[in-house]
Length: 479
Image (cartoon, rainbow, N blue to C red; front, side, top):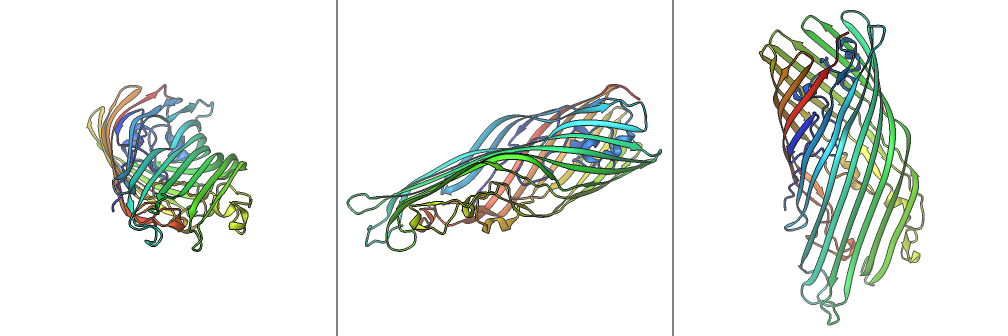
């Protein structure tokens, strides 16, 4: 059985109408900010001409010559996600969303000292929405024939809803040391919020003359927000046709956050441990929990060559790993009732919200060609490796991630420059796949000791997207 997943890419641009586009929830480079930076796939760490350097390399802010630059960006997208056979044969998750996402708005503040540049920006590095429901109704041979001859009728349903977003507020300053060197620092405050809900229910009717009902239910809910801080230090070197840059982003520092976690598990007439049928529940809800979310140490480097007609850019970024941790720490309350069914089981074993990240390296390559005096062609590509840590699969607790595979982004387009503004048109394509996607709760071989779910299944998943970019940048005045 194969699982096919179509997600959408939310474009970093002023206006984007896209088909099958959605950011994934375990990737760092899905979003790019600003039209030129998006068309170059982020290969601009060496430096470019607008205030997106606030995000890519604050050191390059020192070389800007406009006192106030506006690069406003919104994404308008149709988001389609499909997970084939999510719970069983032909029982698919399907999710369609119409979204309007603010991706970048910012500018520069005029200073009396031309050696100093100060910038600000608002960005949306993560926007992920998923809603899916799947249902199966069929006959399965689950119960021993002595108790229930033949196959039993089973009705099962699974639903997942996940809304994840991040808003990044950035304030940066750069000092131009001389004609060739500039250094800068960006203070980044990120507000992250997530609401995750998963429900599973399964009913089986015995062939015992009384149609005795067995059932298993699981409900999980996670809802939190978190504010964290990180600093990005950058240095930029420019001479003649060459630009080079290096940045260091600190691990995040937790500022504040509050959330809640709830889980309900119910079993009716199931043989969970021995040959005796039992009924019971495991339930708890904990609120006003302190939350934390971690982003890793990161190092990026880039070089750009700006010739008379051609501009070539290359960037590479390393993200360090993050060890497993709890987004919220749950108290070890009594979880199972009646308690004598399993007095040793407590809430923290099942309700801690687990997170981790493996180290990844992303690279971007961009090319710009001057067709006419004010008309430019762009071609670019970048990797977007997933930081999903497979070790989480074997850990107890709630895992709220859905995507877990690498994707690859390609962009092409044109920019028309005017005296104080520029217009851009681009086409974006993304693709990715994995043959190691973990599918939870697929009803292919249901049994009683897993609450009438089937075993976890490794399947295939794929990602394809297409988008159209329309961008606008306005330069107010020169220094």
